[in-house]
Image 1 (tube, rainbow, N blue to C red):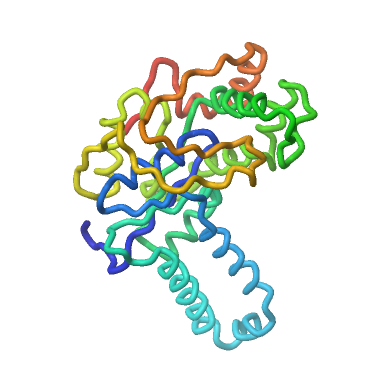
Image 2: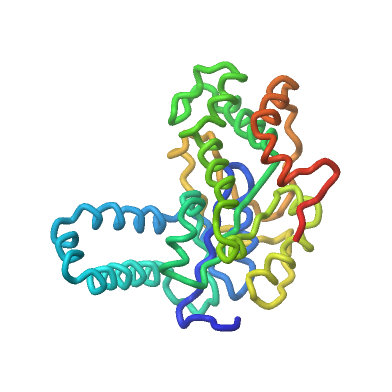
Length: 282
């Protein structure tokens, strides 16, 4: 990779729930130059915690009055050091770090690690809802961590897409990418689950090329399977199953009224990523 730093480059993996981020990490892990552990990582949350904490520290704030550049420089170097330390070395060109919080932190990531690239996983929103609802029906005696089990199906769909909820917040962050400078937008790769399911070889070849690593043929019948992420934290509503063989998920049957509502409320998303008869451009 041209201009590769001595430590591995950061690849943030984020996106919508039930859109394939766990699978993408599995596929990335098959490449010998990429380390992708696949678990949701605390790295982004920790960096955000440092920013919140230092922003209220009286000693740091007092330094900003008379030694602004030095104090800010210390902070930058310390946060960069933490990021690099977390990624580690291990002889890899890239490390994939999965956390949905990266969706609204790309500019912070680029400030600390200028080589950062981000993969954002997308999927038909009705199918995302369908996947969540199907899993809930299998675990209906357990509530969601945000109390959605008492809603009817339409109400639960409406709530999932609201501000502060798992789909709604991710959608808000994805829509905000259009406000970023072109140089930042160029660091983001949008991967539609449907394109991956339709032509996995082609999709991964294009992704590896975009990441700047040598070509690699993925054996979709023998994927690396590490320890699974703890799903009890998510009340079993958002499973992170890693399978040895990649088999595209079958489509979910969505009630017409619910699908119509999703498409109406999120028309901007379908216009941009799922235009009628269109395909996602490279």
